Length: 481
Image (cartoon, rainbow, N blue to C red; front, side, top):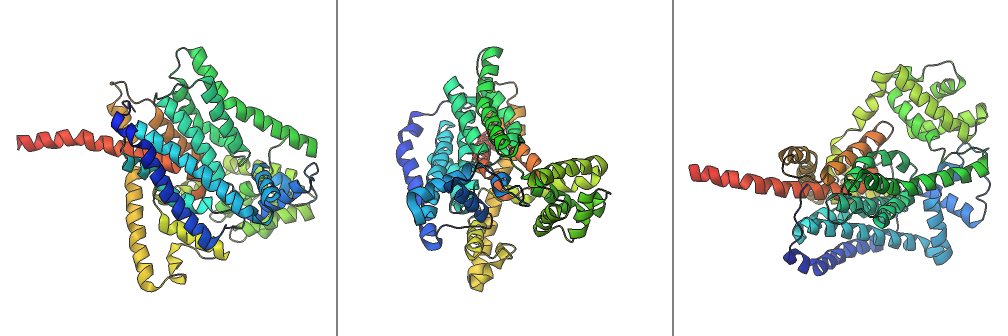
């Protein structure tokens, strides 16, 4: 979108307003941290076990006899950070990792805030885009010992750098391109799916590189953004080749792919048909398609068929793609089921986030939704939370509509006037890519955390543009009346 340079007025109050918002967000986060302490959801135990292996200096060997080899099932980035915090802080390591996550999260929020000011938003609207998500979804992620907070912050910083160049504020020079690329590569060490998600980044990278003059310069800048990820991935695969004899990143497919198959099988059991031993074991353990059944299948394949984690992961990929070839209509249940309205409500969801934090704190994963607030609050308070949650959801949907619906319309309106720069369109493609790539396997709201504030920023900019665009027409209509 075409954005004029920031005014002197918007620049003058930038430091004070930004630090004020950061202080407010930090105060809320610290209050919750002192109340609940660091949260450890179910996945935390796997990362901690990996970190203990690192501290013991035993990462050179992989226990392939285990059904799910922990040091091969996950990438080593987050366990390595946990190991470092344990080495530095000892028994208070969990407080140190949460402090690191909050610091990096606020840094990313500040980057979105400054981007909003450059787009001539007021400090209030810039804060709405950047700081409000920090009090919603990232509120629970920053306080949990999970990869999501650090991953979201690193990816968001890289995205902000690319958007800044795509909007024409700063050219995508080699230093900036490599910096963005290194942030993406660091994200890969926290979540291996970054390799696939990078495909969704290509349009934004292209729009940022397009500001260069000449095809050679454009291709060079795009190459420099992607280079660190390619080198990091190859280095990681080589490390695993030395440990296992096979160049792979992780064996995560041994759960994710079978989890997708079991989800479809709950609607159409025929996807588990077949005479091979793997499908026979799958039919034996399948009941309702729960994750516990996926773990039981891995154990059965390991104990009954003697398959290690690498073989199970390869089998997971093979049967997943086979299901798409032979049962395409049934497999379409995955993306159809994963396209849910809740992804439009991520901008402002403090009530739901607080509920999830309480669930994690009490380690009670059976509580289904925020409606179980009655377990924590009196009926009048629960009713008040219901009203607040409804208002927050409405506001979130409006902002999301500004992003999802107004962006294409604005692109069409400005097609002959030199805008848009491609940034908004790049973010739209990025959001669609994240939902699409995750949606054909498995998706959770926290997987979209890197995109909440930047998509909200585009949504708020679009809504302000739409208001300014409609206002003259409304005034003209009144004059004619």
